[in-house]
Length: 291
Ligand code: ADP
Image (cartoon, rainbow, N blue to C red; front, side, top):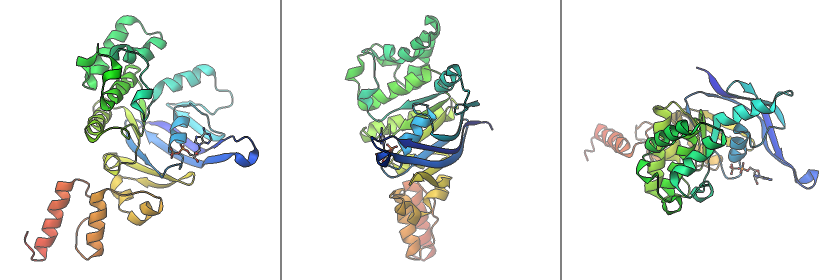
């Protein structure tokens, strides 16, 4: 499997007005992201998740270390503008606030905006826009006014924009945080679909543990570094370490942990509430308590 992102000892600080005000956010961080994978990035507020996302889509460049995006080493001293431009085309970001990322009045014009800026011929743009709107279930809104859409619909239009750009990797920076539960579900369904069916690499920054549990891999950032990295079941089973990092675990994990602490023989790594209820029922039945 090829790696779409390779970061080696990457550090990043924000400049302050004085050297004392300089904020060192990421310290010698190293990791790789496999093409086509789905990774959730967790960490308390201010831990550096958005800063990392901005490095990966090259809104900022690292102070030191090596960063490679889709085979292009963007931190190389002699990297050209064209190479950076090409690497930037591969990685897109969908932000938190649905209202801040719509640039055109009409939905299909908004989705066409990115490819138009790339100078793509108009028939190709038409195809891409139609395909992207269909992929996120928004075809019937193509000629609608973007400002009238719900938050979840606006985020789906933002995703369609990234699809129309043919991004290989999309970073979602708390893109469901401002949505109601229905909108959140719709957007997550679309994120999963574009990862599983279109093979797009997804990085999902989230505070919702049930969303993170859908990923193949969870990376936890704290104090400028990666403190946990593994499958959701591995990471979430370290309940105390998650709590120390200022994070929750999925509610099912917490419930199962408390039952284990109380001496009931239940597994640690079940995220689906119905499955969780079934294993608790079975464990109670083993003890002769039928429910
Ligand atoms: P997270 O996404 O995990 O909440 P951020 O990456 O937004 O964290 O922020 C990490 C740290 O960097 C915080 O201490 C934040 O105050 C600081 N920071 C973020 N953006 C800037 C900026 N533009 N200038 C200076 N400091 C910043």
